[in-house]
Image 1 (tube, rainbow, N blue to C red):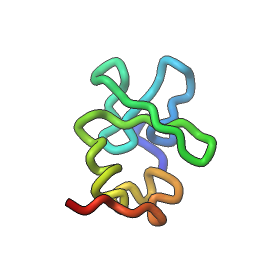
Image 2 (tube, rainbow, N blue to C red):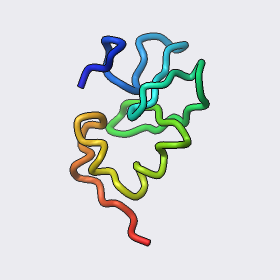
Image 3 (cartoon, rainbow, N blue to C red):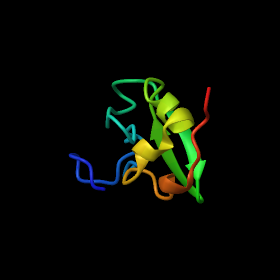
Length: 74
């Protein structure tokens, strides 16, 4: 998936340009958490981090292999 900024969400083209894989807010706008998956680094904001934990299926098309991840049930 290509973001509205013309790049793959969450990866950023330069070290200063990181975007949440969900909402595409930059690290200049909101704190971002780095995650490493399949030897690549992705970024996600604290607001959307629970999606990664509980509903990773919502990241299909944004995080490669997300369809293989199991969400945590309460």
